[in-house]
Image (tube, rainbow, N blue to C red):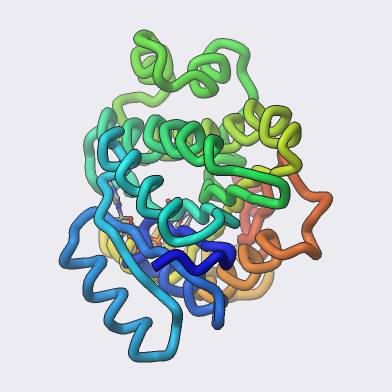
Length: 270
Ligand SMILES: NC(=O)c1ccc[n+]([C@@H]2O[C@H](COP(=O)([O-])OP(=O)(O)OC[C@H]3O[C@@H](n4cnc5c(N)ncnc54)[C@H](O)[C@@H]3O)[C@@H](O)[C@H]2O)c1
């Protein structure tokens, strides 16, 4: 069904932030994608029953053939407006390469694939994390993070993460921010934008899993948050909706922190 209308594509569309993002786009065609068809079908059924114009297709974002299928599906549905890339895993997967591949390499695969669909006023919003702001700039690993598909990239970054998948997550999310800078010029030549958003602790399945593993750390973060609460998916989704809108037409190549002010306080503690 080609609508001619501008399509919003949400990766991780079955996840907490992805679902909340979808709910900010009433009356606009939305394409939900996630790892499994079952997850996609469930999300599409829920959102459809709430009155959203939603369709879906499964896509493992680490698989280039799946991404090509996704792009073909998007092109068939209408003109491409926005990629909201929320699919990802946290350090709880305990696998450095998995974190690097899903959170960073796949992000670059998506940026490149959607660049071909981008036209004037298209926008890519990529989910980074406040923890990326805890990783300082460094010539050696930044070069590797900005080129995650290079053969030596993972090996170089691994030297800095102490074999800790949570730390690898922070580095991968810094890489996401570096990819926005790297791609902003070519997206800009088309009149298109590319930005990242860095959430703090947002109460979704991902954060609740991390909270189970580190309950004391999560409580410290909550108490250090100026607003004294964790974030809700809607706190992030509303900002992403703004970034997709024409009101954000001069925002590109930057990161927007949506962390309740906590990373500034965390940095003071260490
Ligand atoms: N929740 C938080 O506190 C928080 C904080 C900072 C950053 N983030 C980032 O925000 C984004 C969304 O997080 P969330 O809390 O909604 O997580 P979530 O776990 O609820 O959703 C993530 C979704 O990504 C999907 N996914 C994972 N691997 C995939 C793959 N290979 N292919 C396709 N889909 C895949 C999962 O199936 C899931 O539906 C993530 O990138 C996360 O790193 C979240």
